[in-house]
Amino acid sequence: MKAEAGAQENEKLFARPWTFIRGVPAMKFLPPEGPPEVAFAGRSNVGKSSLINALVGQRGLARTSNTPGRTQELNYFVPDGFSGKPGELPPIALVDMPGYGFAKAPKSQVEAWTKLVFDYLRGRVTLKRVYLLIDARHGIKQIDKDVMDLLDQAAVSYQVVLTKTDKIKPTAVNSLVEETLQKIVKRPAAFPEVIATSSERGTGTSELRAAILRTVQDDG
Image (cartoon, rainbow, N blue to C red):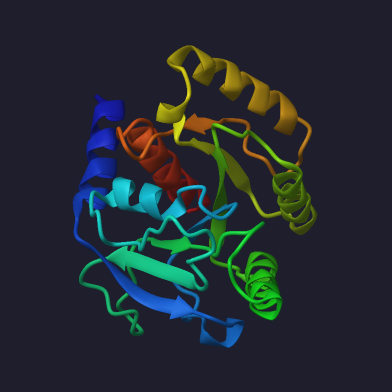
């Protein structure tokens, strides 16, 4: 009964209308620290925006594109009805981070995004966990390992989420989860569970919602 009530609570929060409140192109534009934040990171075109849309059941909330590198800011989303003003704090904020690894943009612009992301990871007190998205078709690449190194060094908790599992054979998903767990087992900041998702089919979204709320609630 307790587990069932928790699942209903998860679905209730994420079933509310959500809204975009701010795009942050530089650290000075970050909203005041208030509600707990969870961020979504990953290589360009890994499916961050699509997964956020699937989590909240709003197809057009986070912008999606087939062009890698389109998300160029930290994009903040909260349940509708919260303006971000003092005294009006939402229970949680979702942060869509710029993709790393490749972007059709000038080098100077890519470097600016990279600095923004890394500064945010190192310095945001209200950041409770990073969900590190890995494309199931490709697995963990060297650049993902580099980001994990950064997160480990900064002691920022992160959890690996496999995306686009509908693009590989169903029998390969469990093997990929186990393989991924083995690759992160000795990493100090990695949460020892991997969630397999598909935004197209909705696979894993309930598990990810539950993981997000546990992270926020466990923090107190």
